[in-house]
Length: 340
Image (tube, rainbow, N blue to C red; front, side):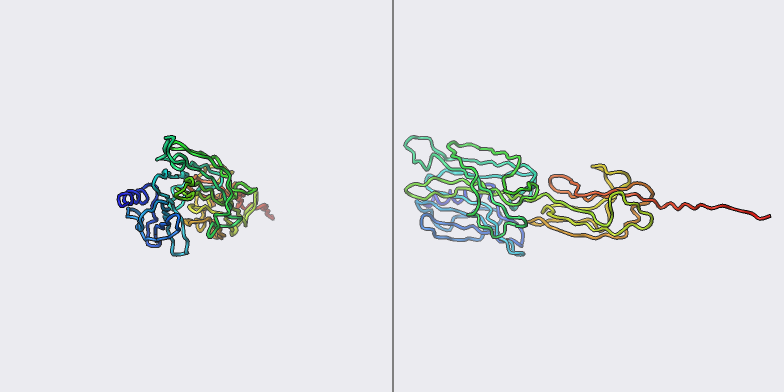
């Protein structure tokens, strides 16, 4: 039992990508759940490294869960799980998106993602136990609602949309061009997709989760510019503007820029002072900004364009734009007369 304990603990604590979150605001711990008794033991761990399991592995196996808790605001994340037993196959789940965020995989509602399911230890002998020859892959989806963040959700309420048996040792790649989180406005869905691998039930242990990982889906941002209208003629001071920003991506830089000429995507203009906003949060953000005294940016008559832009890991998107005409030329009509 001791040698088994050592090898299993190395698997649980050092197999990628099971890493805790670094930083003073996070507390990481591993929860060991003994099966079939359900006895639970929690152990604090460093963000990386390896350790012996707190309890010996019984014939029924044990489930290991890697958790991290953020202190302010108090938020708890389940990062990864592993189930180990006498002859239970092994599996890992890796979700690949265009966002390099390291806490929980995440992406935007209009972007693709890829899932790699790696299975190993599956046996092929006819005499081998059924639980050693096959595992089940389940795909669940769950909406957070119109404004939800996923905090405190009951994942038992998720919808199962796909299930398949895996019987060979390989990397099973699944590519998704679009998510399946429910919602009529596809650009505004927010929720998660979860991919889980389960062992089969046998006489020693119940059906158990071997590995699981979820990807969060966040909505596409939108915004408006108020205070100036399309085609408006400005003759004197430029008006105060209000930018309303909705669903800014958790890792984004949003700003307004102005340039001379008609709207043209990809044009680099001058950033409007007071409009720049950097968001680095675990969930999308809404903001309202007001800017004044931007007259010095518009230094000649003609057509000008203002754009509201947001830069994310997926590129730069234009949220709103407006073109206006500056005409500050004063014309004087008069005549000169003389009296003789």
